Amino acid sequence: MRKLIAGMKISADGMVRGPDGSSHWVTAWSDDYGLTPQIDACVIGGGMYPEYEGYWTAIQNEPDKPVWDGGPVPTPDEVDWARFSAHTPHYVLSRSLTSAKWPQTSFVRGLDEIAALKQQPGKDIYLIGGARTVAACIDAGLVDELRLIIYPAIAGGGVALWATAKRRRELELRAVERLSGGRLSLVYGVG
Image (cartoon, rainbow, N blue to C red; front, side, top):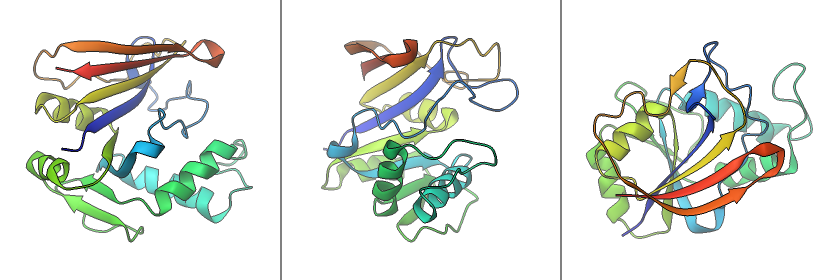
């Protein structure tokens, strides 16, 4: 059976977005938590997908130009992820979205369909987010591993990764790595 591996970037106080709706502490969105060689599909929530598709499409189309006005030029790792995501199937968990610009995008309407994806042959599946989708998949017992990158910032409010979690879960620490800029990488098995 394929594993469903969630990866999230959070502030030290557990937020995925601050009170203003941004994740200004994240310096690059390309970090794939070391997953690229072991995955062949991605699952993402419908609330996050339109922005995600737009961001990575902009880098695919113009890898040498900033995505946002006044922003930085994409890093080489961001260009690599944009290329990888262009040919990787994405499954969007949404009850309302029905169309996407990327031809390799499909829509799943419930967690049972994500469970069915895990039963199909293939490599592991990367659960990109957002916070509600990750919490729902953890609550449903679908997530096998959680990879976090913790940034040395206090958001002071906003969207907490665990805000919508409905039940207690035990986590088994599998790896800790100190990253540049004071960040920490944590890998947990989800029980």
